[in-house]
Picture (cartoon, protein in one colour):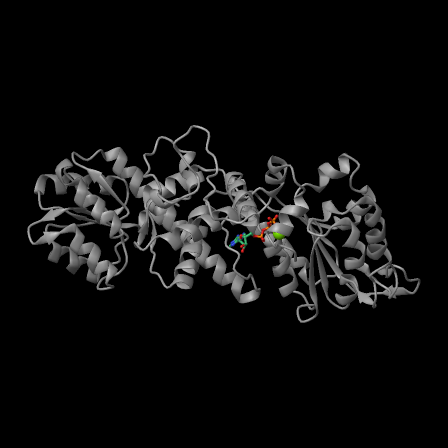
Length: 468
Ligand SMILES: Nc1ncnc2c1ncn2[C@@H]1O[C@H](COP(=O)(O)OP(=O)(O)OP(=O)(O)O)[C@@H](O)[C@H]1O
Ligand SMILES: [Mg+2]
């Protein structure tokens, strides 16, 4: 940190000599290297021949405006630098314009030096974070396939490193973490870094399969095992032979089936439903769960099976405990969804980012991803603002004044929000709408949604067509 702040170069662009010198002295005292210019053209000269990290520029200059500097940066005429605009109260509107053009922030005159100092520090720590993650990503990418996993959290990096270290072993892995923390993503990384990579990788969402078909799905059944079983059916364990099986939401498996899974883990063998021929398989098991320990405590999950699964334990961190990842993930998702939608969205404004940084994301990365997808879909401007956040997020921050969003089903006029169901929907469509809106309200927490609607978790999965 210290080393970086000393290396940080700041350019001050201000035509008023007294103000310029004041800023110059202050920035120098803070320990940065400083350059100064009194016109746009002098500033461009300096930018062309020096590595400048931050530009603090007045809006009105004798030969142009601070916006000209921003445009030169945007057009790639000069190297990238973060721009902070200084402005009188009368021209705050142009300052807002500057933010839309990509300025980092603006500060009104007379300049509060503490505020300026904070802005500079924030820019430096953001930059450091992005540099670090870039270095980390290239370093890791060279050795391992990390897929698209983005993180700068030390704890998460440790977890991913452990995952990669055990990837090529056959040991069973238990991945724990709240909904949307990246459990499936991590399972993919493990498989992609193992010698089983080109072998079958079978994913089973145990919560999505009803008890009656679960055993058939897992172990298969013989012809005539029960009414309707008119041919032999190979189960997922059998299909996964030689490769890997991912038992997602394993905590949802009923006790009766748990003992059979224990046997697969210990002996690598089982019988198809209705059969007595023992089938042996060579498989690697990766299991995932949100709250398996609680289930063990409550006696809903066999302790011996838990121990058997828990050979390597990878516990993913909720997003609210690694908020430093939020800006990085936003950047990644904006890039992805912009590309997908043929748009050129560059970032979020400060208010939108502030709201997202304050929010605790019960639905974790998936929830953030959904929010960014939604915002990218509805907006055409280069910088997304807080008005474009999904309604349920806006509602959490009544301090902000938001436009009524015409045509949206969530009505904000009453204190208790309700779902508006337009005429013309079929019963099934209305039902889907209710599930969708309740999910949104509950930040995509499926368990809570199931409880609110008084239906089973499995029904939610079925309706979402999320059976995998
Ligand atoms: N660190 C990350 N970097 C980039 N994308 C991520 C990251 N973590 C999660 N995602 C994305 O968020 C979404 C949710 O991740 P994933 O499905 O792996 O979570 P999960 O823990 O399995 O969730 P659930 O418990 O709801 O099944 C996916 O679209 C995934 O690509
Ligand atoms: Mg999952």
